[in-house]
Each structure stands twice: as structure tokens, then as C-alpha cells.
Length: 345
Length: 74
Ligand code: SF4
Image 1 (tube, rainbow over the protein chains, first blue to last red):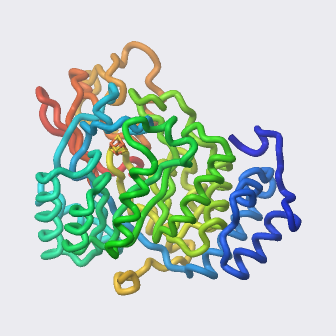
Image 2 (image 1 turned 135 degrees about the horizontal axis):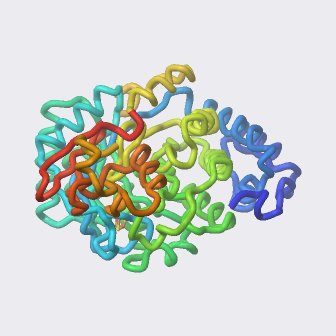
């Protein structure tokens, strides 16, 4: 839903024009926008998109620097998940063409090697589960040990909801960062997932932080949320103070309840990128899935010049990305250095 | 991007599994060329077991075996 479609502009907020306020508050003082202010950015007319992106870029450069964090991800266990996240082709509750598959340790290590070759500093092991069982924890343990023996890269995990004991185990295995997305605003979550709650996800994130792992938490834009809910989500993420926020754009997957939704529009997605950067000035803001359909090549560059400072290179879990070289070439063209491993520790 | 083979031997859409001779598969082809690996065997339309990894994909049909490919728009 673009501002043009809603017919509102929302440029003026208490204190004046929202981008002028953001320049003083976010760029100069490093304080993220409030919910009302984020909404005003999301409601800006498309003619002001360039201005919003330029300011978001300045904020990123000032508070994060020019480096780009590169990550690769791989699905250790694909499909057959008992949860009902309405966007997800890996739910076993939907008539999705995605079938269950497991990756063996050799191929996991190979995927980590391929990722490291791109200059990436993060490699995230992902499983389609509500939460890990003993078998999965064992595979993760073996996988991390095997990667550690051969590849110089930070290992992250995304294994669903955790118990305290599992959090402690993963921290002891040396997991650098844990991903668990809140996916959308708390008020919209029941329209997206019914088999578990937003609060259960929050609880996992709280334990992850307390155990000393970095917190990676983002969501998906374009799941029928209103602009108000998008602003609500940005501010809820800011309250969490995550180390990283991956921003996905909906890929309507066949067989899922969201198969009928439209791919988010590029201008709408880019305004969201700018608004999230202005809400989260110091966070690693990562382009994740869906940018290929929503933004194309040009939009990806605009996003990198509009507040994004991290990318997933190569393929995703069940979807394909553009070839890694294309993204690496883009970073070179934009003169954005890749963050080195010793800067992440 | 579909598994290799002669077009005449690939009567089914690798994205939706429908007969290529019936209906319009332009949007299926767009998805295959950008964000999706093949999910159905183009020879028999069976759903395949697909593993995506950072630089490619492997798809296995229980009847027609394995095929592999690189990222979406290489
Ligand atoms: S918990 Fe994860 S894998 Fe399972 S349906 Fe939800 S998003 Fe998909």
C-alpha cells in the first residue's frame, strides 16, 4: 500500500516536516523515530522517496559506517514444519510443493565454504521447525564443529523457539548470533500465525540476548499489514534493540494462505527500508528474501544507498537469490567495503 | 531454469506441475527465472525433493533422478 494509494501524505508531524525532524533527531542525535514519526515517513508521497532514502543513507553512514555485512544462509532441515505461518512454503499444514529434506554435514560444510569465499562473515544454519528436538540439536552441534574445523566464519542459527537449556547449549557451542523473526507487528501477528504467539517468539529472543548471543530479528513486509502496523513493527523491533534486522519482502508462495497477495511494490518497499533505518539508526539492516521480485537490480542499489548495510548473498532457504558475484559487483560499484571478520567479533 | 533435457521430453511445468501444452505458464517461467528452483519434475510432474544451498539447488524426482542448477538469474 503506497502513500499515493492511501491518499494521505503525513509529511507534517509535531515539530514540522518529518524528514527535517528526522535529520535533527536521528542523524544528529542518533535517536530512532517514534511510531508516529515512522508512520509519517511511510505516508510520504512517492515524490519524496529519494529524499527519504538519502537521509536514511546518511544515518547509516554516520551511525554504522560504510561497511556492508555479508551473510549466507542454508536450510539444514527443509519443509514439514508443524507451524502455520501463512507466508511459509515450509509449513506441513499447507498444500505447498516444498517437500521435506535434510542436509548432511558434508554439504553443510561445503555451503559454509562457498559462503566464506564470497567474503561473508556470517553463515546461518536454519531449520524449519517449531523448535529443535534432541536430534536436530545433535546435528547442529556436529555441523558447527565440522564448520569450525574447516571454515573461518561466524556461525549463526535459526532453529525456531528455544528452551532455556537449548539457548545455553547453543551459546556453549559458540553460536555467534541467533535469528528469530517476530515477522510482523504484534497487532497483526494473529492474522499471520495461529499456532504460536508473538509473545512466545519474544521470550526466545529475550533468552538469547541474556545468554550473550547477538540477536537477529526482523520480518516480512507485505503480508496485508496496514502502514500503521508497519510503523508499529518498526518501533517494536527498536524496543528489542536487535543487533540485526533482516527485512524480507513477501514472495507469495503457492499453496500458502498468502499465495493470493501481491508482491510488494518497489517504491513502497524502499520507503519502508528508509523508515526502518530511521527507526533503527545503529542496527545492521539486512536485505533478505524477496528483494529480487520486489526491487529488481536497480531497487537493490537504491536500497543499499537508502539505509541497508547488510545483504544475504546467493540463495535463500527455498528460494533463489541472484548470483553472489552480482551482489559483490554491486558493492564494488557502490564503493562499499565488505565488513571483515575481525570487525564482527 | 529447468532441469536439462530435450523440450519434447519435458511436457510439464517445473513450477506448477501443470501440462505445458495447457494454460499460460509465463508467470511460472518468470518465477523459475528469478526466485524459485523447479519443484515438479518436468518429465512426469511428480513433486521433487529440492535442496537449495547458497550457490545452487539439487532436485530429485523419485522416477527421473537428480538435476542441479545455479542461482536464479545467473
Ligand atoms: S515456524 Fe518457520 S518454518 Fe515453520 S511454518 Fe513458521 S516460518 Fe515456516
